[in-house]
Image (cartoon, rainbow, N blue to C red; front, top):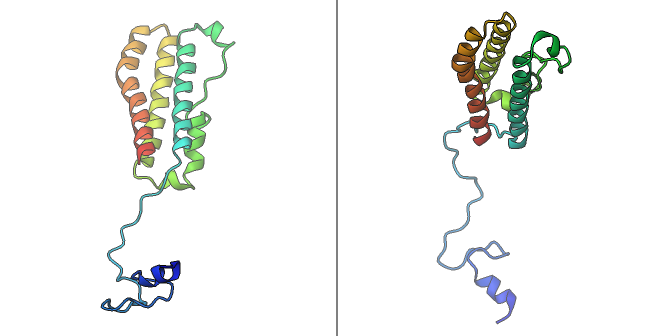
Length: 158
């Protein structure tokens, strides 16, 4: 049997003629069902980079926290919530896909809170109140740091 005869036997051959016993093809598209807006596709690599930026900032923060005032002058300046790499990403992403993600606003707010807590801890440390700094770092600051990572990872998985 040649190829054309095989193709002719298929239910929907090139001739678009249905085989005997099959109903004719309809040209109308299927009836639309309820439209659920698709969740925006996020760039996982971009989110991984945001996670790395957050972790790098945490390393720099620890360096600032562990040095005294005179030695801190020789360190790279500690970026605030807007000038950090993650803060910059959050500011520029609002116009793109990730800004539409349900967790994005929570991430922005938690990131601001995280930086506020970091500044409070640094102020305590510089005032030689390591007891207050330590308490803050081990409670609210740590929860906020973990929450920022959690939100970024959740967005990355969606």
